[in-house]
Image (cartoon, rainbow over all chains, first blue to last red):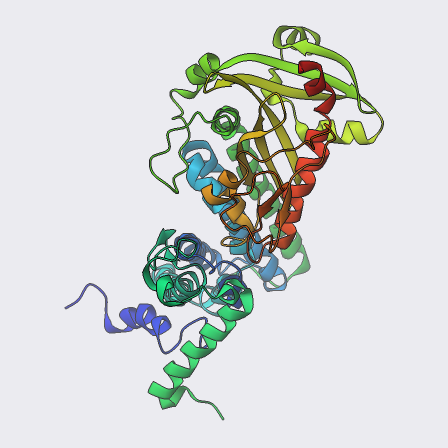
Length: 214
Length: 262
């Protein structure tokens, strides 16, 4: 017996591939375009969303029977916004450097449609433990795509990974640059994230024909 | 559950209760953490000023490491020999104050805590503006560090520029509130900041020209130091323009003071 029952484990593994929030549900595209020019930013964003979605799903799930349905979207928004602001304030007080790295993402986390999507579609109708697993699973599914996109955009766009040059020096013409390779500046532009996400969707659907809708 | 969550009265009560709970929670968090946050911001300003004049803990090429927080107060005292506040109005110096004079006149406020944004607004309204200047040493020569502030693409950008007596750049530090990671946010990278070293702000005749962040200036290694240009960042035109603009508008005001030095 594993740690999780089969049904619970599916909550985590499904969003990683066959029900991925980005490539299948097409949520969270905005932040996937905005911040994936660097691998580091993708990783920071992934952790931030992992935390907010995990905790937020539990909070909403605990409140699900008392939230008035007429104002549930606003209630969800308030929960995300307050969570993010509290975390940001605590980081500012005790881990100032980290909070500076995160500053750009705070606004993006609040508006991330994956979070609202999971609150609305899952946490409002399921218990806290299941909601927690669903939150973690979806955040991981989001993280996988973000990191793949960030990896290719930084590698092909700047020739670096996590800020470390891996292809040689483009100005001194060392490494692969010595044989005429050039960085593709276009990779740093947001549209290229869309093209990479498109390629991932293509690969995913050609491997699993069930995902193709007609 | 017995409660009818669809009733209007319930909805209103719930909304009011939620606002009260969340509001007090946030207010409590903010006010209880405020002293720590202020202290962090204060130390960051000192670190930035020291970084601009070349006092840092950098190891290796791309590294940006400040003097550590436990040493920064001490380093600020030893490395900054003099702090000045220049009051300017309509491009003319009204008076130049030492740190002590400024603090006496402004309720003990340290010059490095002067809010550049507020001062810019005052100047725009035709009032006088306080310009702080931090004097230190670099390779045996005096350097003067000045704060600058402007607009990037999404939010504020700011920085500190170290100048020698002829207004030649001897170091910079840039930061931003919310520029795009990988694009505009790269103004905070070493390769961008280091490009400014040795660039001139004044023409031979002593006229203020400033430095432009320029695309395609055919000098990616930035070897030509007298072209008043540094190489731009790909995909960050507006952030780069913001850097050029804040250098021009804010440092220009210091020109009358630098003229008195020679």
